[in-house]
Image: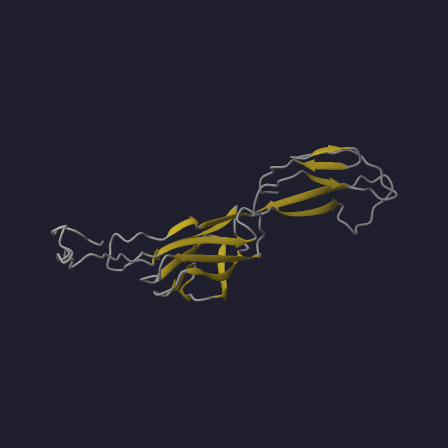
Length: 239
């Protein structure tokens, strides 16, 4: 602010107003935005034993951070922490399923990332997910300092169906048989992890010297011809 006037307008030597405190200065508080992504992308189906890669990103705006930005990342049931692939400017900590990644105070405006892996457990069921909770970045002495924002801080991956098919015979395979003997075959499907997402078709071809008889128990299958049996999409885990 610059003050003028107040004196004799006809006196060019009239003293101007004095101003002891005519300027103000307000530093901008830093902004901190956090995001989490996964490879494969969140929502994609995964398998037991598969390795997932997670990236946590922090974007600092306006000014340097005034306190540590701490990302607390919790792995959900069915996930086991692997390793930090690229820590970047973060300090990794924590243990087990709860991990921390700390971006020290004084981080300049810009983007910072940390990358780590986790493995889908063999006994994982239905889906696996995790979430990150960010804190810090603002004035540590200001209880009203805005917390970091987090637009996408959770991931979820459904488990893909694991399907195992087997065939048995009565008499057992390898047993000696005679002309006109009736052989009974059993086709077994075991579904694990999640419901099927498409129709499962079993096509059974009889070799030379065999004639098809009949389906004695179709169970959950729809069978036709000699022989094709289908299990509908959406069949739940089981045998």
